Figure 1 (cartoon, rainbow, N blue to C red):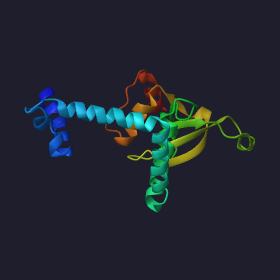
Figure 2 (cartoon, one colour):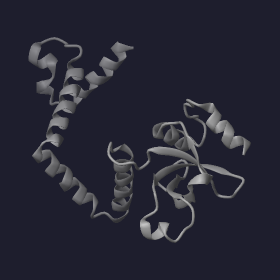
Figure 3 (cartoon, rainbow, N blue to C red):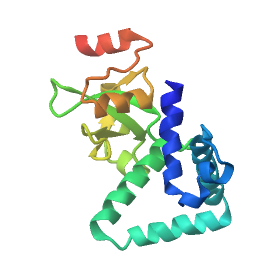
Figure 4 (cartoon, rainbow, N blue to C red):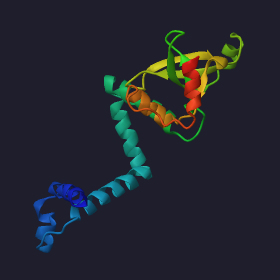
Length: 188
């Protein structure tokens, strides 16, 4: 298995000019040279993007994408959702809930995104939470609602597991730490 991986990564040497191949430089085949080259390229890419010049290159690339109408909307939608999902700060997408949607006899997986702003909270009775109900198999799209907190069921699963469950359209079940929470939802 390791030989196959190293052999595959050695194929990256084909990107180099013939004069820079290890066989030409050293006179013999050097197994793993492509692996080293691949790791060096990944390391250098990380170093470049982490510094000032790399950040300028990333901003330049994003400005190019912003000029292409369809690509711009897709790129920025995916970027905004991924930044929200994978950022360590804030409480967005920190709780996985069950909510009744699209009708009272159905349950949908939702993410709690917060609480309604004050001006909305003053207009609706009872305590509500803001929820995002993603669509399958693309969790980038979905619906945003204010739902009575008393009508939600908090699931004891991670956001990652819930996303896998949604993207797989229910084929990959989430890791249930406390199955009684889901059992309670099914019995209601």
